[in-house]
Image 1 (cartoon, rainbow, N blue to C red):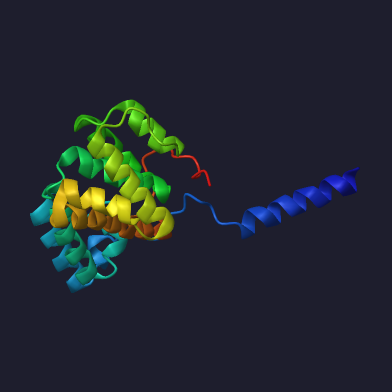
Image 2 (image 1 turned 90 degrees about the vertical axis):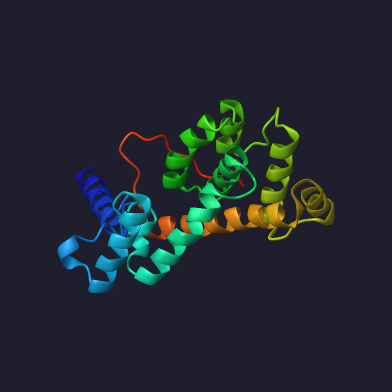
Length: 208
């Protein structure tokens, strides 16, 4: 019995050593004194623009200062200025975060989406990987468009025609752009394993 227990203790110890912790932050904040001149300049530009220190996906992106600044500039428009309006914008962000099981983006944007008028039932259905009931026409169109694009890497002719009729060329390309931008952010955050605050609600694995 002692030999069996010893075997399992050794096996568990080996497993713990060889499997990395999921919560490990691979690209944490860079202390100011360790930043390159280019990183310090980018950090200062970010703070002047966003009125706070580098945070979230911009922390790992700071490893490439030019990429971080250009990502911030694109986000300034796609987060705040699209023709979709705040509620639909946040709806698209939640759909994208759910597709990537992106915990940080969900943690940040879930309360914003509710504040902008998305119902808790719709948000919960997105979190569960279910098609929400009770969507209005614009929500249903954005849901269909984004899920086709993210699941199939394309959009069907009928769904594209609906989007063009409702949102026009600009609005349609902005739906694509918001989903694409937050796909990019999700890829960065998932690669970096950027953590969320302790106790934050976690998305379960995406149901496939």
